[in-house]
Amino acid sequence: MSPLHPGREAVLAKGWWRAHKWLLLRRTSQFGILALFLAGPWFGWWIVKGNLASSLTLDVLPLTDPYVLLQSFLAGHAVAATAILGAAIVTVFYLLVGGRVYCSWVCPLNLVTDAAAWLRRRLNIKGSARMSRQTRYWVLGLTFLLALLTGTLAWEMVNPVSMFHRGLIFGLGFAWAIILGVFLFDLFVLRQGWCGHVCPVGAFYGLLTVPSLVRVSAAQREKCDDCMDCFAVCPEPQVIRPALKGAEQGIGPVIRSPQCTNCGRCIDVCALDVFRFATRFHSATKPHIRVAQNKEVSS
Image: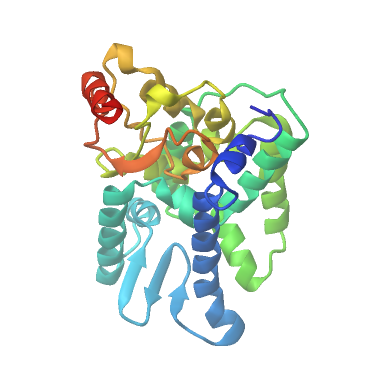
């Protein structure tokens, strides 16, 4: 592995497109969603009205952030039936595909944190502060407590995700300082600091990932040559090892951790195609079956 350029071998082995396929699809999703929201305020094309917290698509489909809805309940706000329906639709969707898909495929702040991670690798910044990844769950609980005690959506006033989205529509203003702060925090203070250790939005959606069907699987883990490229690019690298190295302990190849964002970067950068998207029910091919298949091929 080149520590500054993980995935270089994948480009040579698979070609540039296959070594960046899921990254490009994620960027298309993120910019496409932003474009749908901005088309109305900027050009008068009201395909989607609202924002990531609550929206109406084509004047028919309501979508509501269940995290914001829960804060509203705790704050004692009246909640419309359409908001509850919208939250139910979003919740069911993320229960199927994985809640942290929101973080890697939808959240606009992911563009900022990914840029910080990329620059951190290029500058070879190795020092990092220490913080438990469980901190985000404490922050999540604090946001609910603030809503209950203050009767307001206190967190949404300073939520960088919400500020980024509102700022693109109404002008960034003070949001620039918050977004820059997140970028510098990830770049100089803590690797994957915001998304991986602090953000309560990611913590909440991670809870919806537990029963999800769509998972990344180290389906060909016997091919792994320990290049470590997947660990270098993964925003939650701690989730990889059990699936990749757990065969002797009887651990299956599916990454079951709710912290996995299903971003697909491990698939992209692996020159040996160890990883792929699968379902939570996927299991590794048994070694004796592979041996039998190899004998059939050789004969």
